[in-house]
Figure 1 (tube, rainbow, N blue to C red):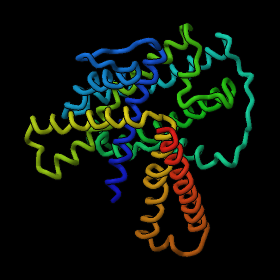
Figure 2 (figure 1 turned 45 degrees about the vertical axis):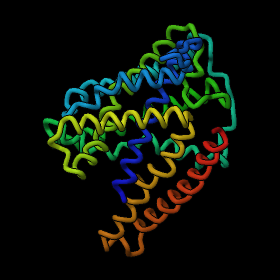
Figure 3 (figure 1 turned 30 degrees about the vertical axis):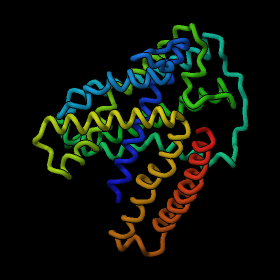
Figure 4 (figure 1 turned 90 degrees about the horizontal axis):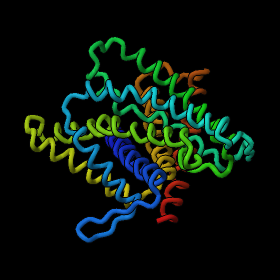
Amino acid sequence: MIALFMYLELYLVAVEFLILEGDNLEKLFPDMSFKVAGLKIGGRQGFVLLAALVILPTTWLRSLGLLAYVSAGGVFASVIVVGCVFWAGAVDGVGFHERGMVLNWSGLSTTISLFVFCYCGHAIFPTLCTSMKDRSQFSKVLLVCFALSTINYGSMAILGYLMFGENLRSQVTLNLPTGKISSKLAIYTTLINPLTKYGIIITPIANAIEDTFSFRNSRPISITIRTVLVISTAVVALTVPFFGYIMEFIGAFLSVTVSLLFPCIFYLKINKASQSFGLELIAIIAILALGSFVAVTGTYTSLRQIINHL
């Protein structure tokens, strides 16, 4: 059950990567279209398919050691994007003058769902750990990653609010003015990230399928499985191209469940001492209550939005 939630979470994140590629490439080349075998394909749809083709070979790698080194550049890429957005506001004329509702209670579940999504990497932790040369440093790596991620996400949220307010789109790069060097650099950097991380995201799913059906020793079948996974994520990205709503669904239904609800429930089940009334139990119950509220309301809201926009 837990594995199903985690793998579904990873699968939808892979879908998000392709949507991200399509949206941002369309921002760079708004008038682009494709023609394949006499069939005309829109710019965004064509970019999604093109991104899937470019990403495909990275999913065939057995060892993620090399890809992990490249993906580590994603940390610097994220900082570059924040810097570019700040530059657009401070230097390129966007400014920090937008003001919206600071506290909107009706959007609380959506906000928490989106924020929890940022911490939904649990399913790839085992894969990353086994790819490390010195696994004893894994805990320190996690601590540093979570700290840097929090600072980065928080900074981007504040900048987006001050620069675009209520007009902020699902991806801040789509709000940036066209023609500016800072905007193009932010978009190009955003495009590179999925190319290096998609393989890491999809590998645990492929490994689980291979282990279940004993395909580990068959290289052709392994490549076929990974290829089918990439094709399926591309189909979903083309069918449901709603970056923000899918992110909210992942955060509410999957990330909250895996990151908040399951750990608390299993901790209470394993550690009998925690069941006695005290500050620890109160904190756990509070987390469960908040998590349940976000899971129910956030999932309902995101699904309703997706259905309404289909």
